Image 1 (tube, rainbow, N blue to C red):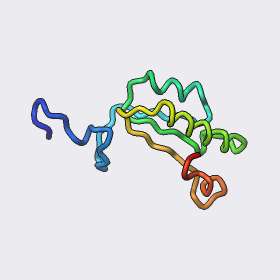
Image 2: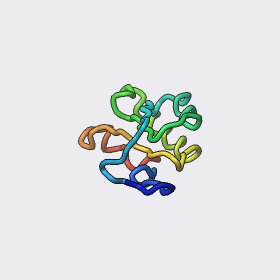
Image 3: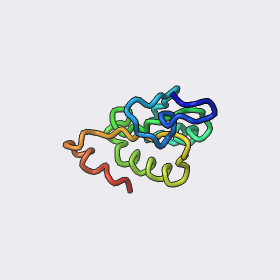
Length: 100
């Protein structure tokens, strides 16, 4: 437990402790530019950018490019960023990393 007046490391956006507490986590389809832009205005502890089942097969490449551009322009340092990808054994998974 953190002492009064001290921020707990478990709640730091840069802490990777397996039991980190999160009040709110947003899931955002990576091909939805409007939703990506809205992330900057929302109070959340983490955002999951979804490149997997939230994106149709026809939009996988575009979603990857859109997300890469978004992260270069608007990445917030105060929230945890999670990128959900396809299985690395699939054609979509093999091409996912690194982002362009």
